[in-house]
Length: 330
Image (cartoon, rainbow, N blue to C red):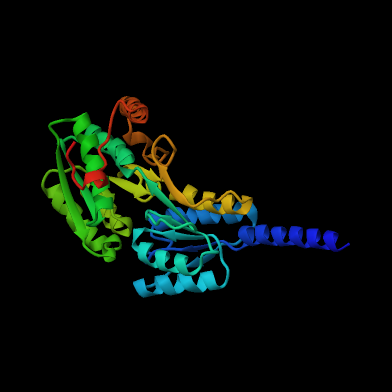
């Protein structure tokens, strides 16, 4: 009788543990907020889809400043939320501290790397997707001059710019690529006014296509492109709908899938710590085509970029990763 009771108690404990994993997911966005129309909103789309598919609500937290990130993480961990998805490299330090203090809670950090037994680090091969949109920019350009507006001046954003430059030069070796970064702090990802100014400066220097890898700052780039009758390229989410007819394409980074898969795997008991790297081959990055940019992508452009995409996946085209040596030598 005692053995039966113990067995039953064990089953109940396991069931309770599985239910906890399935019903207590959380997410901490970065300071740009979940409606930034870019990186955070991509994650939010994955969160929303998970809730719609399962009926399970994901606890959301939007910090207003850097100090609130760690405070919010600790509050969620103390209350037993797990897994907690954290959005962006800026959270690396806070996540590492809190994850050490709460070893029973699982964390997934998107765009950051933490080596702890309860943390999954999801990173992307942004240089591969950026190469594709760079090639498209070069094909669409009438001036053989294109631009890049980055957000915060860090290796991750230079990785976008370097991949983009390689794609541009692959399609047109004589092309000029203008590059500017918005700033040196996290605020650089949420400054549409500065984005507009930088884009207009590049247009004045002859650029007619500009790729923004700058979060919410990109909104200003896209508006400037529309105002000037030029083309722009979105990032992270499919942003083609923001300025239809102006957006040549978007370099899609499937942060939505990263968030969704974290929750799904946790519910199934298959979530694992460690590094997850998502590139073209894994469906982690790509370029976007839909009704909003269909008129801008010719059949020839589509065929060429499809060929380039296949060659990157096969290894026939090797895209240099800026973060491998902090240079854009290729």
